[in-house]
Amino acid sequence: MRKWILALALVQSGANAQQVADLPKDQNVLFWTQDQRDTAFRAMERIAKANTIAAGGPVLALQQGKPVKLELDVDAFMQHQRNAGLLIVQDGRIRFEKYALGYGPDGRWTSFSVAKSLTSTLVGAALKDGYIKSLEDKMTVYIPGLRGSAYDDVTVGQLLTMTSGVKWNEDYADPKSDVALFNQQRPEPGFDITVSYMRKLPREAPAGSKWVYKTGETNLIGVLVSSATGKTLSAYLSEKVWKPFGMERDAAWMVGATGHEISGCCISATLRDYARFGMFILGGGIAAGNKVLPDDWLPSATTKQADIGVPGRGYGYQWWTNDDGSFAAQGIFGQGIFIDPKRKLVIASNGNWPLATDPEGVGAERQAFYRAVQRALDTED
Image (tube, rainbow, N blue to C red; front, top):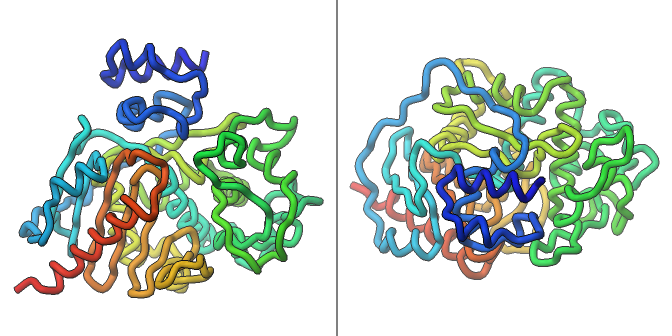
């Protein structure tokens, strides 16, 4: 049945018969071919069940600005990155916008781990609204199913910074890694599928002492927010950001087997709406004149809270941070929202890299592109 659903989604998205015939038996996206991903990334919400993140109200217009002059071949950069879309917005104006891979401005593209930064922002909103009392609270206050596990001593803040000390394998190339297996298991009766898997993991270090990137823990953050607020993540994101900030189109958020959004992944939105989310963060988390986040949230969330072992970089509350004050939401296969408050800059990109992650190759090239845009803005007349 699952293979049939995937085949139908690909046909509806314009795939040819050969693409359908070539579908792999293993449906984990990490092991699809690049051609299959090119098509499927435009249709993820039709491959599996998803909740709608409703837009509504006046759309925040993005005005055209003067094209940014870059000392590099942007077309060649996009081809090498296999960008489906690249959008540069500076001071609220579009300075560059281009699409490829059969994708366009009206289409949605999956976010992968870009969703992590949106999920953490909902924690900030829940703090502001009083649903979550403190980042020092233990996780088990909000997710009782974790009691008696390695998460007994883990705080909300430690989960946000991925410093729980719980053992996890995020190897995207390993079909037996935790990140490949945790959404494929059968949940225990009475437990969310994420909680069912995560509560069985062992501890490898004291809580707060070691940073390890764990998609499963962002999924726990999503369970925390929905449990605390009594709302789905999609409804809460629509209420706090998507509607009041003026997103142009509905987005979609895929849900797991027990009905929760897969909060470490899998929002599908337009490139312009990803950029608008960057603008929401850049503007201090204000939507329709209302402060959505606590006053101290963004200064903490978007600066280094954990050392990741890379000079000049760090990890905040589900944001990748740079020592120059810029920060980014990043997803496998080339998804990203780069934000530079100093230059009032947002760069949104969608893509399909040859590998899920390649920090020394296309990843480093993308970082160099961000720096090239910063230099270009600094030298403008």
